[in-house]
Length: 199
Image (cartoon, rainbow, N blue to C red; front, side):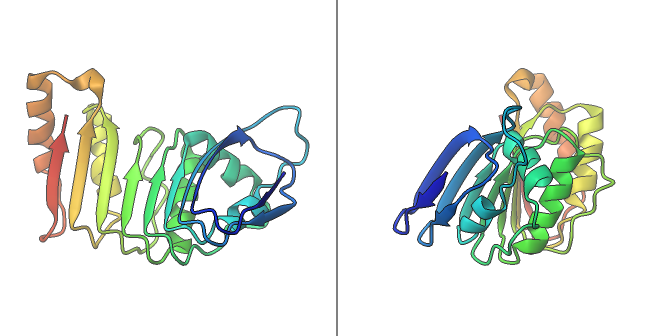
């Protein structure tokens, strides 16, 4: 497959990962949304050219499947994302958290990070020094394990100005939401950081 679209500014690509991307010319791309998955019929997957081709984006959205595919099949490593300021990721396992750490390292201008779920985060993957100012956690359920993971995860970000936690639909009970808010208010954050909990 080829992407010879030098004037394209927004790409939403949902497809099985391919063995080769012959040409990826997306030099004007500002925002990309990737939903990649593995297909058993495709041999020798390599998404390096695709990821390099979108590395100029300012905003990048990665589904959990995309995170897995990129971690396993970006054969020549991640490029530097010189313009990336907004990143949204989903992860269901340790590979995803390792990729997030690598993305943070390769994205020195990143300011906003949206994490779609803390699922799979174990705290044993360290995030590199970063300049993330806004951290948005989606799908928070308020379990004791999740609170422990959130506290550990927040400790990895030293420049935070805003942390927003969105409670999952399953936890939308006024009593549970109040309990979650009380527990989260006890989380240690940088002094200038605001903390919001939404349901």
